[in-house]
Structure formats: C-alpha cells, structure tokens
Length: 216
Image 1 (cartoon, rainbow, N blue to C red):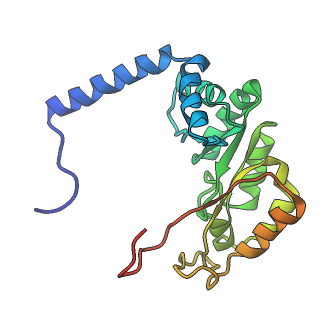
Image 2 (cartoon, rainbow, N blue to C red):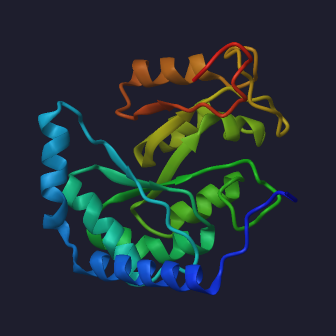
Image 3 (cartoon, rainbow, N blue to C red):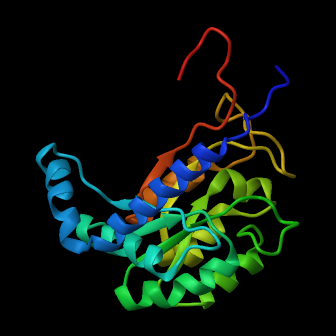
C-alpha cells in the first residue's frame, strides 16, 4: 500500500543467493565455443551481430569480466558496449587489450560526477587507459553536457563502437519527442558518417515519454 519494493523474506534471499551461485558456476564453465551455436542462429536468420552490450559494474570479479569477453569473441562481434565507471574502465582496459576487442563506454551527462563518462576529460582518461578502450557515443547526452558531437566523432571515430541517436536540449535539458526540435545535431552527425564512410552503427534510442494516443 505504501509503494516501493516489498521486503524479501529470508527464504527468498537464500533462493536468490543460490540462483546467483548456480549462474556463476555456469558462467565459469563457458568459453568461446559455448557461443558459436548462438551466433549461428543469428546468422541463419540473416541477422548480423555487430556488438555485444555487456554492462560491467563495480565489484565484478575478474572471472565475470572474462566471461563477457569470451561471449563476445564466440559471437564474433567487433566489440563490447558497456555503461560503467572510470574505476571499472581502468580494470577492463588490460582485459580488452589482451583480447584485442574494442570496448565502447557509454557516455552520459553527469558532468558533476568525476567517476562517470561525461566530461571531455573523462573520455580522454578512459581512452588513455588502454588501446582497446573506446566510446559508445550517445550524442543526446553529449549535447546535453555541452559538447560538439560532430567534432568529437571526427577526432575519435576510430575508437567509437557505435552511436546512440536521440534529440536532447543543451544544458542538461530534456529529451524531446519531436526529433529536430532539440539541440542535438542528428542530421549533421549522420551526414558525417555517410560522407566519411565511417563504419559506425547508429542506434536509435527512445528515451522520452510516449505521447498520449501513441505507442512505441
């Protein structure tokens, strides 16, 4: 009645812990070959896998990180995308270098948090950690943080795994439902990819409230 999530019972907590332990054991038993049949299903369906989204949070074990990279290699993708902290980016860098697999760190506009990928300095820091540390550039968040997405892509396109396309206002403004009414240079960015033939996937991302009378 008061809202929020209900408190878990001791039995539920124990069940959740047991399930997590079982999952961890299964993950530890996987390797690159585990994912070959999965990749074949996509291939047979005519779907090209470009990237694996595998979020790597603070506190992950080295084994869990290795699990993600083995999955990516087995799927045959060109890289991994992740939302995480700079602290984790430093840990991930040597693993990415070992596997020679580009990791694109998703940027946000939390420029007040020095452990987030948000400022130009934070992007420079994470890319300096390792050769295969790259960027999943969200041009909406990037614009909201006050930066020029076109200039950034021109300079760092070789380290960009993919783009998230949305329209936001500057100065940490909101997402807008009618694309083209915000401040994000979506057209200029897409024309740049076309002109320079940068092989960067551009993923449309819906992050605004669905208007009344419409649906996803």
